[in-house]
Image 1 (cartoon, one colour):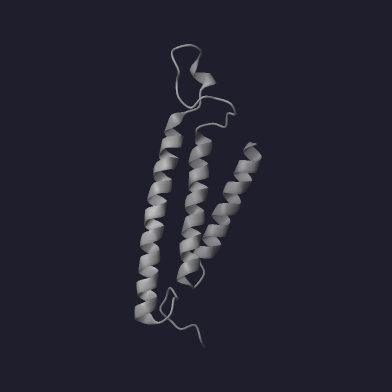
Image 2: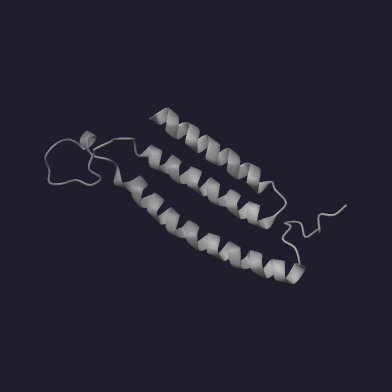
Amino acid sequence: MELVLAIAIGVLAASGVWLLLRPRTFQVIIGLTLISYAVNLFIFSTGGLRTGADPVLRGTTGTLAQYADPLPQALVLTAIVIGFATTALFLVVLLTSRGLAGNDHVDGKDGTP
């Protein structure tokens, strides 16, 4: 399971970096989103991968090894909300920039030689 998660994080991060290097603004936004998904999965994996474990303590029975760490789950939930907000802000900036400049290139050039 850890290998599959590591490969997924690597593919998301590599795809995000590749899209960040593209000349169009929308591709840059999608690249940032993919990188944020990769970071969220990485934070999730730091809490340990346990199937069937309770995320919070119920009572005082058992040891802490039986429970999942709730801190990475809370961090990822917060990061998802912040990611949606920043993506919405980026899209508004994209539409405004496209309206003012007439194109959606990151460097402002038209793209024709």
